[in-house]
Length: 229
Image (cartoon, rainbow, N blue to C red):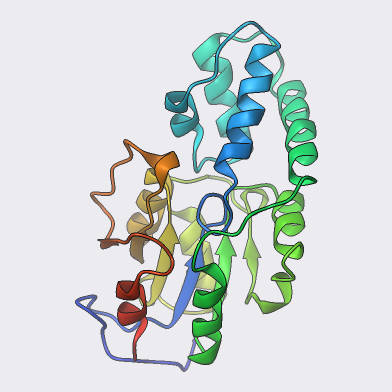
């Protein structure tokens, strides 16, 4: 078990001993890239990709997201072929550069200064997660990396964050989770963690009823107050 402790912060009744961060749309501005991928995939088949479809896919592991796409448009492609085509498109877009979300590096520096361990828990495939994190040399700074390849049940199922708490060697209620999507917040809340929603333009229409708090960005001072010892 972690030996770090603090008093319950800003209304959360348990000490926060570690932080788990989602990646896509939370750490990096990847949702426009996913939109481009979805747009191209469907344009090749005579269909139009929409934000509503993207929101249904958001936060889910790749196989589940592809299943949503196939179901919505009754596509005849095999999931494997469609996933490979999607991966190829996404790799090409990632090569063009990645933008970090506002406040990310300041938050990570704060966590390090306060000796609060942190990790990434993402539905993305491991090779994409490693590619993105490595582009900012973040992997050595993480306690660990959990990806969609590491769980059998993706978000909104709580397995991802139950696994994260186990890796931190703490109880879920002692873990703060940062998520931008409805599915991610449900996963975190159902694990028992302190789920903090960080909505963006790409999550318009998402509901965060189960989140403990909703903040404007990773630079929101309410987050720092919540993490205060």
